[in-house]
Image (cartoon, rainbow, N blue to C red; front, side, top):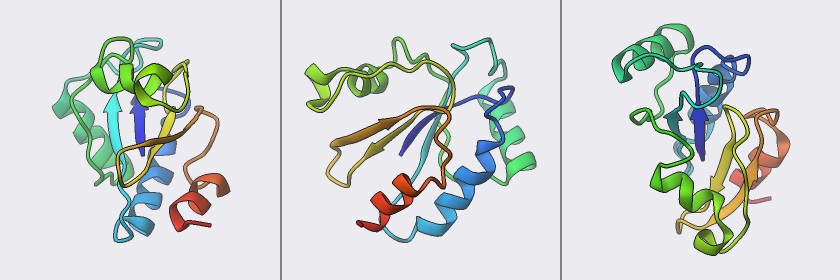
Length: 130
């Protein structure tokens, strides 16, 4: 799962559930990759070190966090958002904590918006192969 994250967002508490999801399924061929993003409301102003410290201290985050990116220009997000490139769907990242499900072969499966919580049944069933 790829997620654009931010430390000063109304959705920031999702870090707790993202970590719980990661802990529950990390040994079942599942990982989360967080991409801190300051594109929406300037809600991720810190450095990579600041972000990692905040996430570890406040939410116990152990899943990988990348360097801060812009979802408008980062190559991973250009691929995720373009059906022409990913072969599945066009999507738009409209705020922080959008989730992209990617299978073990690197194929995009689905895009979920910010309001979809990490432990949503749609996500857990997908991970469990149900």
